Image (tube, rainbow, N blue to C red):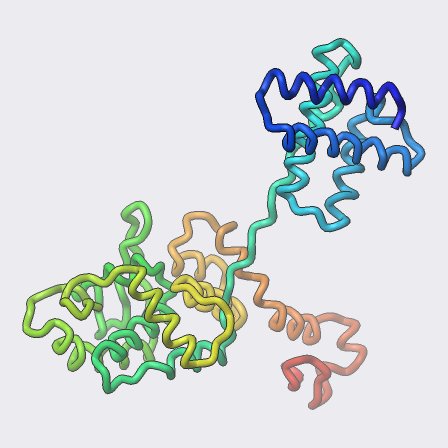
Amino acid sequence: MSRLISSELDRFVTALWLETGLSDNTCQAYRRDVQGLDRWLSEQRKSDALAASESDIQAYLGARLAEGSSHRSISRLLSSLRSFYQYLVREGDIPADPTQHLERPKPSRPLPKSLSEAEVDRLLAAPDTAVAVEHRDLAMLEVLYACGLRVSELVDLTLPQLSLNQGVVRVLGKGGKERLVPLGEAAIDTVSDYIRSSRHDLLGGKQSDVLFPSTRGTRMTRQTFWYRIKIYAQRASIEASLSPHTLRHAFATHLINHGADLRVVQMLLGHSDLTTTQIYTHVARSRMQALHEKHHPRDREQGCLTSTACSSSTSRCRK
């Protein structure tokens, strides 16, 4: 690092401490960020930090991101560099801030945790229906997986919202929006059996419209249901971290994996924006691979469409 850069950096850190009252550790972190840029520019045989252009800084941030730095770290780094260059502009040392048009990287949206179909089967097999509480829990799990409800929507369900004859449930979602969601045969059978028997035991003679009451005959909390799910996950030897939302994610990903239209899944989930639903398409890789093998002309040349055996993960060629 040149004496000029070192001198400017000393002045910047001092001004930072005087003007903002930041701790010495934070001020030194700003120093290291600028030093890192200056060192990288030197390695690239480019100018020093004082003469860095917007493209130089953008390239440096890209290199750091490629090396594995998180979006959060890159945002903090850009903030440090921007403070340094804004200081230089104020002092008249440079004509313009090279970071002024650079935007902080947007963090990638985390993929939702989901379960495989085999794991869902094990989870649904865990409750003991001879026990009233567990019979209720199985009915809740079946509805959650069959309908993809939010947990708040599930625990708020009342008997009038349920139509077993028509096989649908009327859900009151975010913003007071209503939607009709099909239940499916497995959920209908389990809920019907639960209503005829275990629900009466849980209510203990009390009158209530709550579909899935607690042992006190009142509406169950989301936290209680989360606790109950963890019990069954342990029984089913599911090691993945679970939350009540996990089955909602499984509902969406399994539908898409089996060819459901994205807009249909959007309506079933109650998403107002299709982009929210699109995150679930990551789990459709196995289906996409099978479709590629079925329709791509290069796969046709390999005889995938005409052979009885297929090298795909599905073990069978889809004709």
